[in-house]
Amino acid sequence: MATDKRIDRVLKLKEGETTCPATAKSEIRPSLPECQLSLWVSSMTELSASPAGPVDQMRMMLAGHVIAQSLHVLALLGIPDLIESGHRGLDDLAAATGMHPPSLHRMLTTLASLGVLTEIADGEFGLTPLGATLRSDVKGSLRDQALFETSGEVWAAWGSLVYSLRSGQPSFTSVNKSPLFSYLAEHPEAGAVFNRFMTAQSNLQNAAIIQNYDFSGVRTLVDVGGGQGATLGAILGRYPEMRGTLFDLPKVVANTPLIQTPEFAGRCDVIGGSALEGVPKGADIYVVKRVIMSFSDEDSLTILRNCRAAMRTDSRILVIDPMVPDGIKAHYNRLTDLLMLVVPGGRCRPEREFRKLFDAAGLSITRVIDTGSSNFILEGTIA
Ligand SMILES: C[S@@+](CC[C@H](N)C(=O)[O-])C[C@H]1O[C@@H](n2cnc3c(N)ncnc32)[C@H](O)[C@@H]1O
Image (spheres, protein in one colour):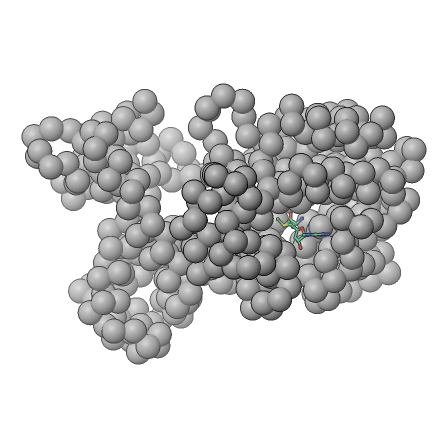
């Protein structure tokens, strides 16, 4: 197993050494954090003479909630931003965040031992590249993802995973008494975090989409469920002749600074509405990015049928979604799939399920493009 090999490799490191032998191989994705986690696993073995085994690996996996919630609180308290702006000492950080210094110290040293922070001197902390991803002001910031995915509402939903397994329904709705998108509309603060998370995630994903799909010749594009316009903005920025329409729920598009920039003046419309009721008509291309994943088969079919009804005979549709591979091949999208089950009540589908949905909606898939990232592009036309 790959994990065993990684652990073996790390076990060959001398005590206290944190440099991973694989780091030089990959300049883009340094593997220090991976090594840190593996060192943790190796530190757990109860029989000091034996290498870390399944019991230790399982204990580390079971401790995932400790790590996830600590990262959530680190982001929530804005500690990465504080450290970046020079607040490095424990007392300074505790005063700025209103925390109990000895307890905060326990969390910060634990996160430092996981490679998220460094301890520059006793009680003085710095950021590693890993920890810097939780700053609010960096490109590709994961701060809002950390805030949303381990928020109280989502955390409570995971506590009822078994409800979703039993019923096939999202436990988020059951524990929060409201489906995700209604909840976000009813709770503006949570809605703002979610929308910022979508924008930051899109900013990470847009390049792979634009590099893998040629929009040349497209004069009009509707982005269905386009959030606050990060993907539409990236496409319009690359294709200056194109006109775009951002379409999403009214409260989501009520404030879309990205699209209001002078660069897009006169070639971008913003329309609030529900794709479950209909979408703007007559565009050359309909982009439906990471939307179908959030819905049940029944609602996905309604959205696809509404897109079909809005399309001209020569229009195209691009469903851009994370697909799960067949079989049990390791893939991050599998974790996203479980998240979709528990939170919005959707699903990361394999290709064959998309084919069924497209067929039922009167659409045919013309191409499936692997963007090399989590997203796949399914191009379709009217069947
Ligand atoms: C997972 S987010 C993806 C956002 C964006 N497309 C992206 O890739 O970042 C799903 C989007 O679907 C929108 N949405 C949910 N229900 C909708 C509906 N009934 N009609 C239109 N958009 C909807 C949400 O507001 C949200 O922006």
